[in-house]
Amino acid sequence: MGRRGFLSLQQIRKLADDCDASLQASAFRYTRFTPEPHLAVVSEDESVLYYFVSDEARAIGFGYLGNREIPERSPTQKAIAHTFPTIEEGATQTELWFSERQARAELWEEAIRLGSSNRVITLLSWQKYNTH
Image (cartoon, rainbow, N blue to C red; front, side, top):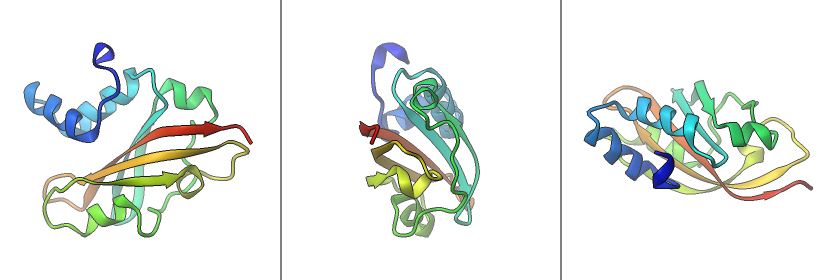
């Protein structure tokens, strides 16, 4: 994965299909090995169940996802509303997902329902990072 550079949710989904792996496992593996700040979050019924953090996200102070509820009007909340897997995406801010931090960042959020369950996988990728 490292040689592929940044991967979108759609690209991770294709990689999962190519490797005959689940989307969730592929997203977690990508998050583990990407050199980019990145999180993969699994939620159910608008509550965070668990998440994986890239080493780079942890290094810049975003290793702990403080908020346990899905932000209102977020791509993740929109994905929850679908009855079939449809990718929802859009810009978001770290303040919506993380507990209070001095650092702030602009994020790109991508989310999709996992099959017919009430679970959604969300990818959070850093667009810009600001230490103030």
